[in-house]
Length: 219
Image 1 (cartoon, helix red, strand yellow):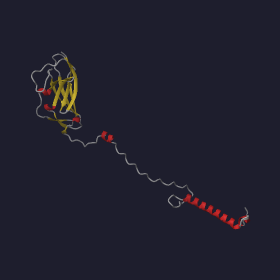
Image 2 (tube, one colour):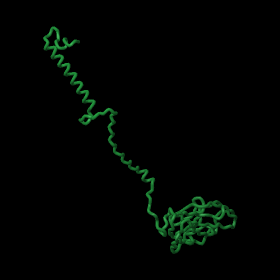
Image 3 (cartoon, rainbow, N blue to C red):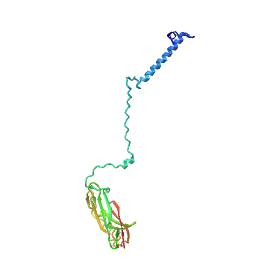
């Protein structure tokens, strides 16, 4: 289009109509350019971003709040025992500090041979502790199935307490020879001989009770 046609529009309509159309078109173009410029230059906070010839630095990400530690489950809390303070030496032994065993000196005893039964107490704790090891706190018992055959408490039921200091790893043993006769509480004199068969010795110290060796008596 030449300059004369641009400055002197021709057509069936009056020239003012063509000028108004061109003015509207130019205004729309200018408005579009302004909007594009603002959208490209806006930093998202209402102000224009200063641009240089270099690459535009990416906006730094806002620091995310650190996640709070997940609460421990009740099952995990119960499974993990709390760490206790160091124990002082010489305190009373806990049941879990002690190993209690009951032994027989053989697996089989011929006719007339009497079993030697022993109660063995060992301190498994890492510190010395005290425990009543008197006769009233100890028991050796012989059973055969569900039959209570004999007990050291029946004829020697007790006596004064005997509190002993048990060093870590140390063992105390208490033995008795079983006469191969049955017994009952109160130690009545009519004590029948134990029949040939299989027996088990049970050891007790206070509230700790443990099954021990199995052995047999021959006739």
